[in-house]
Image 1 (tube, rainbow, N blue to C red):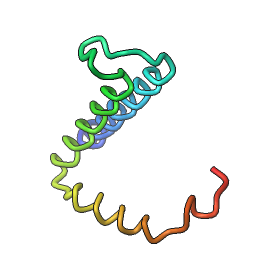
Image 2 (spheres, helix red, strand yellow):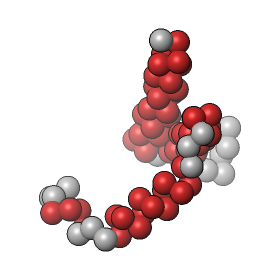
Image 3 (cartoon, one colour):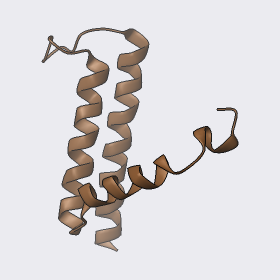
Image 4 (tube, one colour):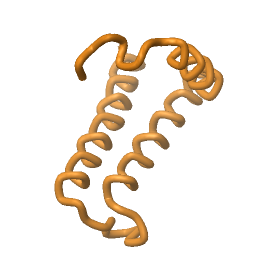
Length: 84
């Protein structure tokens, strides 16, 4: 049970970084701590860091999964027939 709660907490932290990135997009401002970057980009970087940290802790080969997924997506029709 603890592991499920811990992993759920990690997912929540990843999602919070995505929400913070959306706020950065909405406000379109430079990051407070890294002013050379937009806050949207810094928050997406935080999300990536959390995703890679989580994947490493789980022993997953995330880079290989990303490569395989990109190759698979290249074989699919644009937007998979959807309007958006």
